[in-house]
Length: 194
Image 1 (tube, rainbow, N blue to C red):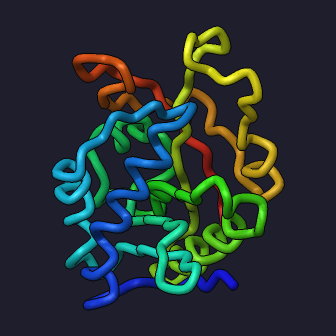
Image 2: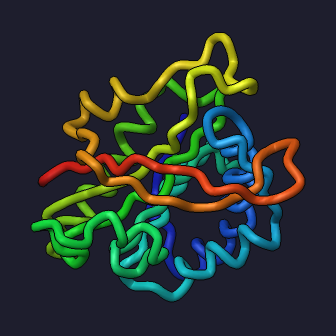
C-alpha cells in the first residue's frame, strides 16, 4: 500500500537525494526531456530544506520513494516564474506555486496525483493563499522525441479545477536529452482560485 506524508525536518533531509533522483528519472521522459544531474538537483532542492512555506510530500511504497510533490510560495520561486504575473490582478503573495508532481510510471493511475493536489491546496489555504499555480512545458506536436502514445495531462488538471492562464508563459532553460547545451523552454501557467 502506498502512503503519503508531508516531509519536514529529518524526514525531509533523509529524502532529498531520493527526490533528486526521482526528478531526474521522471523528467527525463516526455514532455520535459530533462537531462539532469544529481549536483544540480541537490542545489535546487536546498530551497525546501529550511523554508517554512515549502511543502514536500513523499509517496512511499514501503520505504521506497515512488512519488513526490513540491510546492513553495510563489515569491520564493525563481524570478522567471514571477514575470508572467507582472501587471495582473493576482499578487505573487496570493499564490502557492506547485513546482512538480512526480510519480514513477508503475504507480500512475492510482490516485496519487489527486492526493498531491489536495496536499497542495490545503497547504495554500493554511498559508492564506487563494490561488495555486503550476507550469507545464510546451512542446510542438511534431517534436522528434514525442512518443506515438504520448498523452496530455490537461484533462486531469481541468477535472481538478485548473485552467491555463491566458498569455501567462514562463521561460526557463535546461539541457534536453541528447543536447550538448541548455535551451530555453516555454512553460504555460495553469491556475486555480481556491
